[in-house]
Length: 287
Image 1 (cartoon, rainbow, N blue to C red):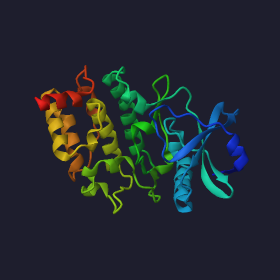
Image 2 (image 1 turned 120 degrees about the vertical axis):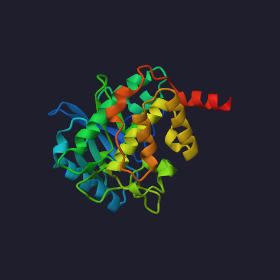
Image 3 (image 1 turned 180 degrees about the vertical axis):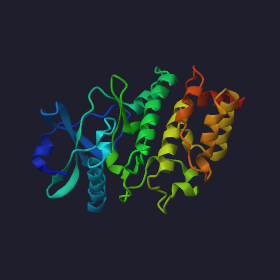
Image 4 (image 1 turned 90 degrees about the vertical axis):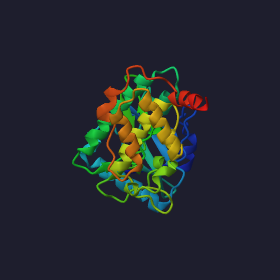
């Protein structure tokens, strides 16, 4: 991987890349960098807040392995190009900009967009998850969540923040999304460490994908509820026509059985899926 030296005064002249309202990047700050005339694309600079040498080196190893793998040809994977060095410290990466994109978290939060439209986008994520799982590379996203998915104007999907993924058993960084679900902390298949962080795995990737589906149906972060509330809500979905094939998969998140993707069963969802079904469930529960 090429190391691009960035001077501090050069960094100060760069314009910050604006994140959409409601999207928070706690790991880095993004800048417009320059035009790549040869490839006809604009490049961004991702400067990490935490430049701990060991942590950054693990990210670099992950990116280098991805760049040398068949996964580099997946247009949906936004794999960083080069590492940047500021005052002799490796501090971030050069990445390509996805033009005219919308962060998928904003799509999920938008009540004017139908749930079925959101599910159609998630089908593309599920199809990608299937393809990478059959690649010759052992690869896990680890942090597959709505804010790491970009959707362009043609509804093509792109996955970012792949410097925290795991490839070919290189020592990965811990997964983040799953730590918000305390119900997973005692489930051995997630291999949670003392800091309540889990290392990327197939079970975690599928958990993250299924959870995005469930939260989209619910209009809420159901994975953050307690265990009894979680199962009560699934019973409500059962009473309202959601396929048992799908519900059994959600139930399995907290068993020791390997996770199964909801993807093959998404066409079993009712054609007209109600918005914010969790709020409706809560109102009915109060009566």
